[in-house]
Length: 403
Ligand SMILES: Cc1cc2nc3c(=O)[nH]c(=O)nc-3n(C[C@H](O)[C@H](O)[C@H](O)COP(=O)(O)OP(=O)(O)OC[C@H]3O[C@@H](n4cnc5c(N)ncnc54)[C@H](O)[C@@H]3O)c2cc1C
Image (cartoon, rainbow, N blue to C red; front, side, top):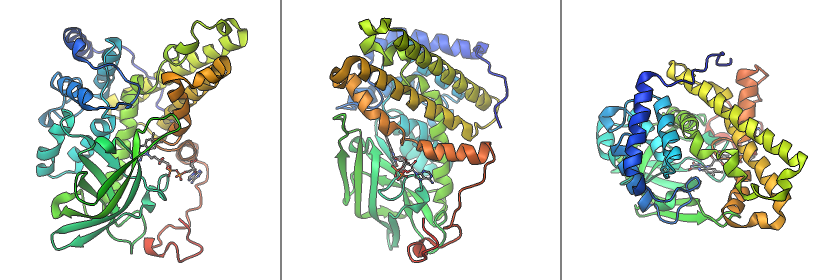
């Protein structure tokens, strides 16, 4: 199913008023912003988290969060407007996109009143950092195959296992952790979501350095970590539903943060803007293609946001946006490498180019997104799922049921 033709690009009067307010506040306070960074690459998160606190108090972060938890109580279009105005003012975005975009909304949806009172305001105001502890060395696309175990103890739970690709774990005070509480039921059941204190004994965070030289994510080792009984988020053994909610918020976050997460062609191609090669007809054609693709993606994003604003949920076809953004970045990287040769490896742009291949995996791999679109949008036959209904603990033992 496609969203239909309607894409409303005009601000409503209330949205226009929000934009004016955002612009006026940024004109007055924009000088407090730390230097804008690409994505989440910072050596010290403190200035960005202080800035996040200011933005939160001004209603420009957590725009879609309910007002009772410190949010703006507004819609995703207003969230996009805030992002656009930050960009326009040349101010930094927040670095805690995952926390504010995914983890906070999950806690608000599934947490107890006590958890919400304790955690969500400091998260929104950048006073406490959070990370998402889902992926493992042997479970990424097949997230339900995680092996990290949570066992009951007299005082609560004991956690043992390993997570990987954990963005910003090195700066996190807490994490939202998916763990297996019952291995004797099929893999999607028997999972539970927990809040974990990242400073607790038994938690070890090791940065993973990329070929770009930066280390935005980490391995996290969990050895006999003791959690209190009230650390569960949502039902015990019902963690799959909680995780799916987090991933749904991830899709919405990616749409609203599009302007920050997907650099426009003029930014992508800045290193070659004044290079003589730009006069070449083929290079010009490729730049034009990138520009058109980026515009197309932006308007497809608007279409999805219009759907959400109208109370509809964007379907799996929204995954095409993620595929397109990464594809545009990869095409730009290839073009710049061709024009500049080894100089393309230098500086911030070299880093971006080196990270683009990894972005094909972040937030769902291209193959998985394409599979989902094939099955749910195009109605193609589903992949065989031989592990369906088989208890997780028996998966390795039954040769016909390979996860
Ligand atoms: C920049 C970045 C940030 C990340 N941040 C976090 C984070 O904060 N927290 C977190 O929990 N995770 C995070 N991740 C992990 C991310 O969610 C996983 O990388 C992703 O789910 C893919 O899992 P995997 O890396 O284990 O790859 P795999 O699932 O092992 O896939 C390897 C390859 O096989 C292909 N493949 C797998 N299954 C199929 C299939 N059924 N059909 C066709 N092809 C298939 C994949 O498409 C891929 O090309 C991050 C990843 C990146 C790159």
